[in-house]
Length: 428
Image (cartoon, rainbow, N blue to C red; front, side, top):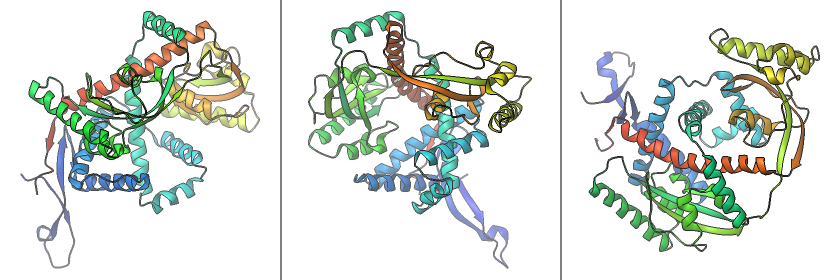
């Protein structure tokens, strides 16, 4: 069977079979799913628009197709795993995410939609893409981030290093990754090394690094030019941090080997970091939690929390009294929902994102986290010095982020290698 997708055009006087017209074809099979030529063309067109906006010359069409096809393969593999393991984003969660993005762009939802469509991006397709991005983010949090462990001895070593050199540099950096599949032969590893060396040579000779990254890199950010932006020394992978400490602005590193493959790093700018103990923003907040369980469905939990919010908003009930009566967080519920002063990193990502967007006195919309549905209200904020306990927590967070980046690269490589992939792009 030749894998074709046919569309029937209902033309008067023609049989259905006679009216069938070729409109698309399959360019890759990924496990139980497929990637079509129209999907690939749409993805390439999106990236070409993005590169034009950035002022970056696009690589040759064949290179761009190969890069985008590989990205689509990895995306499909991640989405399949998310769906197979029960990750879902319902309409209410998606609506809130869309609204938040529109507000962050200082636009109404209607204006945001018109802006997308002026740029040639259908709103419904963009919305579905956002749903998939959130699913992949949740998958990463569950399968990678939550499994990263940082030992007390690692924290001790990190704090000693900071004490010896408190003013560490910050780097504006970009990178290229040439991925190596698991259990690669020595010949395959040498091919990857040669590809990394070729990318390094072009970048060192003055070629636009963003274009070199778009041409050679297998990293998820390749078509964004591989830019990592400004990163403090402590928040870079140790492999990068070690190389960058010896580089000058404009330098391009030799290929750096990690479990995921070969990396090439370019240092754009460098600046001295602030020394000493930094102040952090602490938030005092309260919340009401309705947990989901075998007895309380997703829909029922969402309905309950929405009802509680309505009672608070219309003034018929007091937040503290409702927290005492209805919150499934017994510890804070007994105190009217009040939490201790919260530092960055103390709460799960969805809760922290909602917390950061609230002004003192403001009540959140229902917030979904792995624990259930929350109502959150910020009571106060303050800047406070970091005591020893908090320094350890901050150090643990920095190390966790560093290890998480490295673990995610390795996890992506394994997911890609374990997927059944059949390429058909060359079939014409």
